[in-house]
Each structure stands twice: as C-alpha cells, then as structure tokens.
Image (cartoon, rainbow, N blue to C red; front, side, top):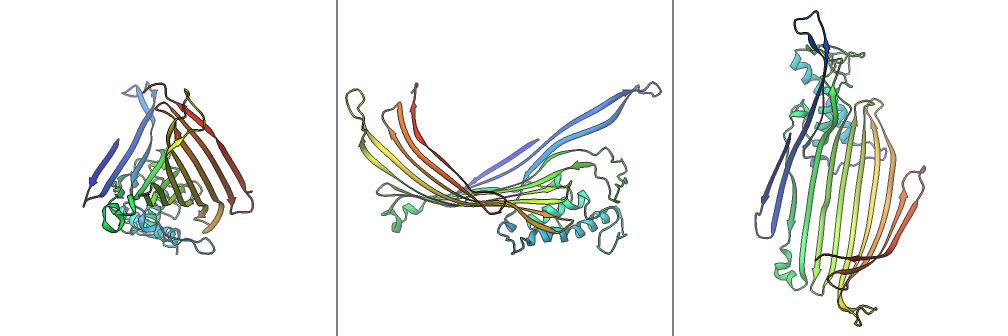
Length: 367
C-alpha cells in the first residue's frame, strides 16, 4: 500500500509552496500447513506469520532545535521517559486494568519496557505531542505534510534589481517515522493475555527498531547571480536521525549541521590554449568554489540506565573548486580539485584528509 499526496500553492507571485505527504506499508504472509488425519479439515494452518514494514510522513519541528546540556542530557529524551507512565495508564485503562505494579506508576502488563508503551512515548516526545493524545497504534498515524518553499521575487524589487540578476531563497523539510521490519510474535495468544518473563503483555507484532528521520536540506538557502555574472551561495543544512532499539531499549541520535558558502564566475569568450582543426575555440569558462563546514555527533541514550554517551562525531571541512569549458557542442573539459578534512571529536578516532584532483573530458557521441 503506497499513498502519496502533493499540493502546490502560489499564495502570491514568485512564492511557491509544495506540500507532500506519504504513507507506505508492505505486508507479506506465510503459513505452514500440516496434514492431520484426525481432523475434519485434513490440512491445518499452523504458525501463520505476517511480515512487513511501514513508514509515514510526520512533523517533528517542535523538537528540532532541542539541545543537550554539558552532560549530553536532552530534555526531549527525558520527556520520553516521563511519557511512558502516561501511555501505560492509557493502555491499562483500555483493558480495564486499575492495578499499579509498583511505586513507579506503571500498570500491570504495561511496564516501562513494554513495546506498546515505549513506541508511542517515543513518537509523542519527538513530535512534541501530548502523551494523553498521541495515537497508541503507530500503524494508524495519519500522514502529515512536509514541504518545499521557494521564493525568487527579490530580484524583481526595486532595491535589488540593480544589483541582482536572480535571487532565490529555498527551504525544505522532510520528516518520516518508519518501522524497518516487523513480524508476528509467535508467543502472542488470541486473547492477548500472554505475559513475558517480566510480566509485560506480549504484543501481536514484534518490532525491533523504530526510526524518525528528519532532514532540512536546505534549512535555508540563498542563491544569487549578480548583474556582473558573479554567483553567490549560502546554505545551512540540518539533519537528525533517531533510532529506537526495542531489543536493548536505547535511542541512538545522530545529528548533523552544515554551512556551505560558494561563489562562481563565468568568463565569456575565453580562448582555449590548444588549437582544434587549426583554430583555437572560443567559449565561456565557468569557475566554481564551494566551502563546507559540517558537524556530526552520535549520542546513545539508554532508557534503563538513564545514561547519555557520545560515541562518535566529526568536524568535516570540505573545499571544492572546478573549472568547466565547453570546446564545442560535443566536447567538454572540466578541471577539479576537492579536499575533505575530517577531525573527530572523540579521542578514540584519528584525523584524516582526502584529496581528489584531476581533469575530465566528456565527449558526446549523439546530439
């Protein structure tokens, strides 16, 4: 099942807003039929199983800018831990259970590690919803719109038209909740009353991981072409990946921030230094320079121990330069230089650098 929705809005001239929403669910079933001569139906369906995966567009903007303190404690993760009690109470109330297991506030069958308690708490905390109103079944989440916003009208305004030939502002937002894979829990019973070794209800579906992926590429981008053909670019990107592991009850958070500045220029009617067919071709040459500064950090947050630990991180500096020259309609020459410097933020890793330089020649056989 694949549902995609797209809506394009133009609230005023030069402003374009594109809304996108999607929901994808895949299900596969398997059964084992055994011959039983002592039954009315000779073949009995034993151990039917369902496998599948699921993803849906959501909005996690409310927690995008949450930050850690000096000990890497994050208020959103702390909210997740607190929300589990509320979710436990809601699930217990739906079953008519009123008995609290202990002084921690969790109800019988719905302890702090129970799958149906942890996943809605994870969704509520990182989407900024109330634990009292978040959906208890993640498969029933309604897809919410993500968006792309583009505005290119500044160059048409009087103060900017004399300086800029084009000036475009972009913003993009994507956020997805996904369950990579699930399968029928073979220990689940039809009445739903089976308990595991620590007294939690066994869920019908066994889910190993649930993930929230948030990407703003770009969060904000300015692309400008001046009247003298000089190109200017500034871009700020953000991304965040949150992976909830139900096997060891931890959230792995990978955050990234990136600044990109760039410039370029088109030199017109530049003569090529070599002659082709007795003449030196004359064409435009495009120069480009981009500088990127990116910070990545990986923090593992353990629920049972209530610990937060940085396990990886890098400060990445990237420099890219290129020169493109079109000799004719079929032949293009490009020279490039790229250098990437990686400086780890933890002492167990070592700095590294990679350099890539060369000349590429592209010849088009068909026109």
